[in-house]
Length: 451
Length: 119
Image (cartoon, rainbow over all chains, first blue to last red; front, side, top):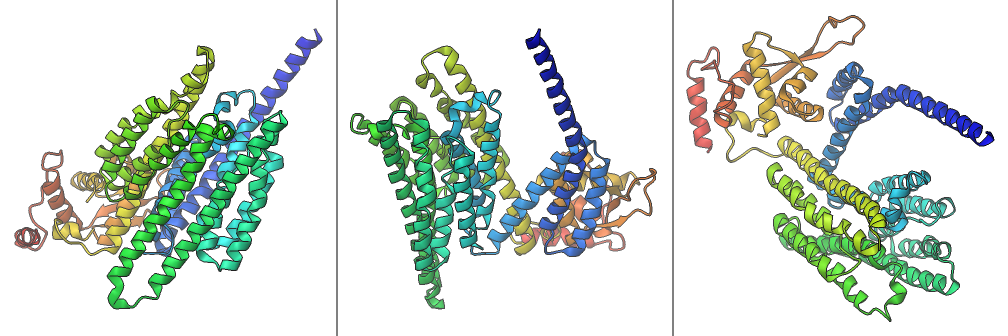
């Protein structure tokens, strides 16, 4: 009777709390939507205060007419579009920042990494472990400061350092590892050698903590030591690689600045070459992380007995190389990624590279029309399905296989669709900027050319 | 020239034909069946190009509702939009009913001539 009474009481309390939360969220949604809409307008019309005032009043009044359920999604849509516009605007005006897509690419890659590293296989356990949502949320929120890494690299590095170290006691089993190398790269590319070296040294602490997760995940001491050592070596390599790439970037930019005007074309090609290198290095670093976490993070100590793992990782790296040309020939690169990803499935047990497809898809969505990009999105279902089907190899019984497969499918589809959507938004944003900044020529009639 | 732009122009031209002449932003969004941010982006461009003008209504006809902003095509916008739609969407429901720009009998012919030259 006591148990039944306890259950009834628990149900009543849970119902009351959920009801309260629902009511509160219902009341706070309009306020949040209002704020979001105002931010969107300010972000979108920074260069036109008069129009900003008009749009703010207009859109807020529209928001007031919408049902509560639609307020936040509508404001969110405006916010995302304003963000895409702002990013495309920065790119078109030749700011110092890296390619615009990078800002959107980072969260995507990190989201993959984050889920893979922390709880790829625990996605189905959210029902029993709701705190996992907070862990993933923390990892995503942590990314936001990285958007400002070019403007304030040291501050962003410090933020990443604090957030990574803080994650260690807060989030068991999971410590985010991407923030540090990305911020370190920015410091190395923008600051003096001394400061960047200090940052590199400082990065050993969060990296050490990330590697020390091995002591939480393994029970046997020898396994703990093996996993810790391999993780530490890997993370240090990534950190040093990011630092080196940043220094290389700074050297190349200085070199270009010191050239004279008549040699401008040569400088530009040189700069473009370095940008490609930088891009490849960044992608390689991310993919290496992803590759290890997804395939063989825990198998690193088994290389001696399973030497073919080296080939697997090599394949994972080689597959990245074509991505450097994704802006020049997006369709070809997508096709290559498609073939290489699908080919990986029969060749490599337990591992199928997942990063190539969304990155290439983003490029296609950005450079091509809606129909072609939709076709590629559809085509990506096959490699994505194969990646998810790795669950059938990892788990022995059907009951164990199904849940990870479904969760993998959902996750990968979200990532892929997200990459496509991001590409489309960037395209729209850039078209807007082009219409405003470039002189109209070519096929347009005089009337249309005004637009 | 994008599809959303043509959609919005169609809506505004139809409104012009139906003597409504002006529509508020969200009505344009609904009629064009495009997302809000897309439609407002198009409206920005059209306003910058001088194809449309906008104004606040004096007061909302519904009580306790904030005022809305209405948009309508300018005379130049009507002619240019009709010509653009005829060129880009000859098979759509919209059929331009204004052969020339008001007050300038040969302007349509001249425009088409220059348009041809630009190509």
